[in-house]
Length: 442
Image (tube, rainbow, N blue to C red):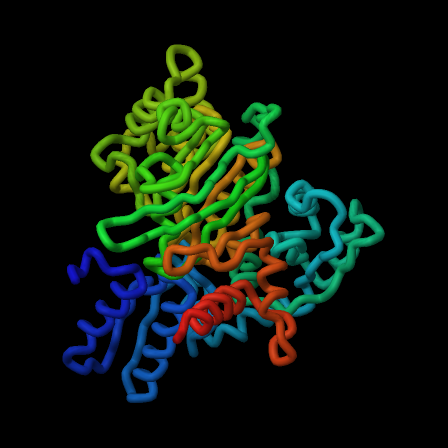
């Protein structure tokens, strides 16, 4: 098979195999986990750990701090400066006693997270299924958590992670308010389902990439498509945003059939591709101007929208710079800005934060959470399981079929056991895929 047609996980394994053709003393791995599903990532880690047992030194660069946490020694860099060197546990200990999980939340958890992040005693927070995970500024910050919480809410200490300490060292996350969402109109109409898939099937010759995929996504919902590399989730994703014509079945966006009314459907959606898909030889300003025109913005409205996203995403000093020369975080900001200028009802995000740092990832999700509260519906694919926790519901795709559908907490509950009573989303992903393999075995 051509290397370019391999799945992400197989590409990384092939790259590792090529690097090991002549046994090295030192192995340099530059972000090998980017775009790789949890099963392939665990396989990759096992291979690398086996190599260290053979006396091979490994330098592993990554923006995923759960990977850094698994290393023996870490060099933590930010803006060209070395912030920390040592064992991950030595840095993690700085936030001991300052990490809490809030569960039993009444109402929508996204507005609550936004308000909590604006409190001076809280420096970071993320959504974790139906709960919220928070980091306080100091050990007396527990009192800052109570405030607006309902009586039913429960606050429990949570084990600190290396990523918590990283964000703390940088002074905290970006806060909870999104200027992008504040400037977006409220989407509300009689149709409760914005994205619909009914029996979607795609065949390439004798190979069925996706088979009988069915789900409805409600207005103001974040729906995740998860699955191993090559499982069929990208095929499903492309059929629903009009990039791929289904062999069978029906897809709708904002009530428009993707076969018969594809132009109208595309005008109602925004699309952010897995790999940077804007025009690298055009400047930031030229990309914004082009995509504003593609999405039908004209005249003063077009100028106002370009000015707005330029200010929100801080593009002013980069406006004349070629898109291909931007750092990854700015590329992702530009891709998001181009996808939302026309205020779409549905937003399609294909691995939107792949390879970006934790602060940029939080900034991105602050915008998405804010847009969802304005009625925007989001379909997202990701291999980063902490990111999957932001979803309201998830469809797990494997071998072209949906093998599980439910909220992150529901999927985790399905695989909980006596040995692992509180599984992570990654644990759930791996257990559900392996369970499906066992069921299909002769």
